[in-house]
Length: 145
Length: 145
DNA sequence: CTAGTTGCAAAGAGTTTGCATGGCG
DNA sequence: CGCCATGCAAACTCTTTGCAACTAG
Image (cartoon, rainbow over all chains, first blue to last red):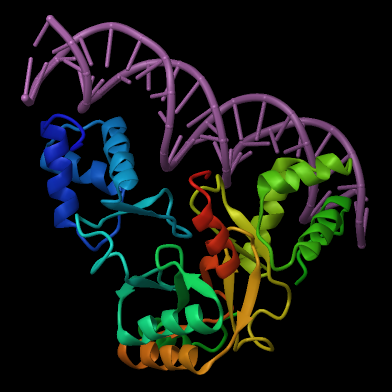
């Protein structure tokens, strides 16, 4: 069931999501984008389409501290593999969000599953810390708490 | 600066948070708890105190899918040091909190610092996922979210 | 024509703020 | 007594739902 008719709004939304593949977008960002390029899409429609895609697994929904509202990320068709497995680093100073995926994190996941009987969920898990830039500038300051 | 006076409400809230240390609580749960034991605390006060403690780092705030509203977790005084090195696995089904520290996570930290220019904070970072027990029992069930 | 889609407006849920009252020190 | 804390109500934000109009097939 490819769920429904083709409409202008769906097409536009899909184009945008595909363009933003691998990045998070908030509903606000989507609204702002379409507003800027002069495409008419109601907020309701955006939410409805997004929710449908979350149900089908084409889109992942995240919550991130300090970001108002949900973040959505287009995953695409092959949702079990390649994409969707990456993790996020979030700098607590500048709020920068860094995507990463590497051998080490896979090894950690495997180790934790094998040795600690725990399956880590990349969608929910966010690494908090400090990015290098903020760390460096923090070092220079005399007093920071 | 311990910012402010001692009040009944603050005391009650602190007691509850300390009792729930290591578990997440929602504002609804807090309200329900105090309602049940007959302690009068307004929702506004809860939010205000919680936010203050988030600012001072005594409480961590996070969002979880499927849970309406924010979750808060009491961290306590020793938030930067002492413990520091081990990480937490948190089962999203049964709320079990597993401490762990191993070569793999150290390697990951080093790798991320070296390759991704990011210093992971073990205190803030919590791995979310599913523990084996819950995973197994979940497999058996047909569907009952 | 028919059923899915859209979008406004209104309802809901969670959270914050304004303001007058009350309590700690 | 001064100042912070409290709590009600209202404001606000994000999201969902009801419903009538619309449109793809």
